[in-house]
Image (cartoon, rainbow, N blue to C red):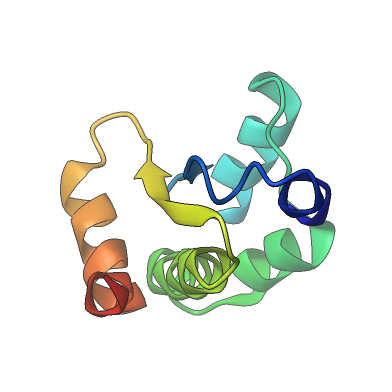
Length: 102
């Protein structure tokens, strides 16, 4: 985003960051291996694998990431993606408190 800000682009447009719910270590590894462009750092995958409730840990992780992204100048929101994950996505958005930042 710094390069875009230096070019004056971030003041003229907004950017959405694509995120999706993380429900397990297995799912995270599948996404990395099979969905082109997906980046999930190994420490996050390890957290999911060690969690007693991986789904809740995944919600917490993605909510924290969403909150961090929308605090970056030029990022105007997140695009939550996931097959049949509408309810999970809504829970993440609420947990992230990003609606309060608008």
